[in-house]
Figure 1 (cartoon, rainbow, N blue to C red):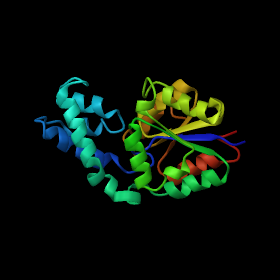
Figure 2: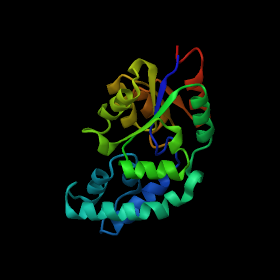
Figure 3: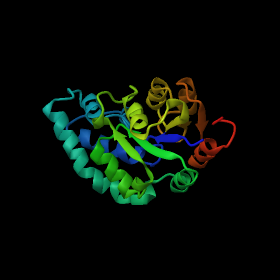
Figure 4: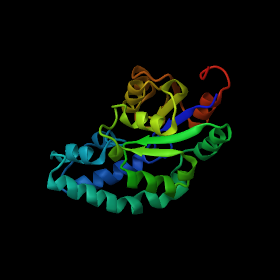
Length: 223
């Protein structure tokens, strides 16, 4: 039986959390904020405007938030995308190829907006491995609501019972549960293994090759 495997990007496929956190911190400091490192890191993988607003002590629709978001997006290509395929975590490209070769459909559901997600997937040379990419600005409600996952399933004609979500945050696990998906959490991203287990992850993997092996087991976790 073929399945649909849906992935988060930051901290799951690409080693971007550190670079993104550094960029976000630098941007908000440019507007006078002095956030703690852990508060900045906690924003990775969440919608940009809301994260910046929280760090700046401003509203999501305030002018300063819009200015900070524009500055972040201008610098994203130079500070993050320029690293290209080196951003991919070990085993990701090979693992995705194995999944596709086994006949499974692959998708992304990410809190990034469409332009940013496609730019990152293109820079890391894995965009063409996915059957669809659903982003925060393509649905009414982002994570932890199920909208993105449900849109993926609708586009690919898949059932929740035949689908898995792979992510690195408690919010990812909440979305998977809300959509009726099974889930694999990765412990090398933003949230810890105990937190991910407590959030309802069906499995927790310490590296992407383990994710691949879990998803491709002919019997066991997929039975």
